[in-house]
Length: 67
Image 1 (cartoon, helix red, strand yellow):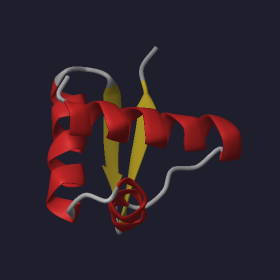
Image 2 (cartoon, one colour):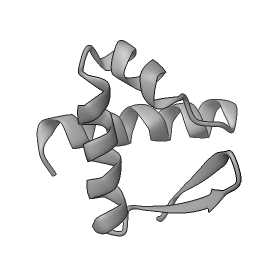
Image 3 (cartoon, one colour):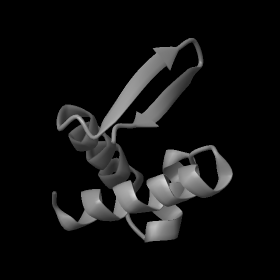
Image 4 (tube, helix red, strand yellow):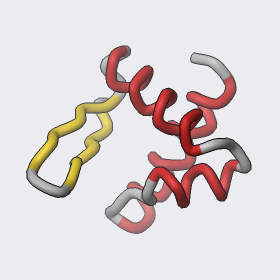
């Protein structure tokens, strides 16, 4: 994984483990000081690599971490 994808993964995973929910893409970008587009691309790479599963439902997406 590249540096941004690694940062996104660890940040989102730690918040999921701690609070039981994930931050928004915008919150993640702000916290990691990267562009929203970079976070979106990182999430896509994580999904493509099988590290996360994304379930789309109307008006919402659910991301789950794969152990």
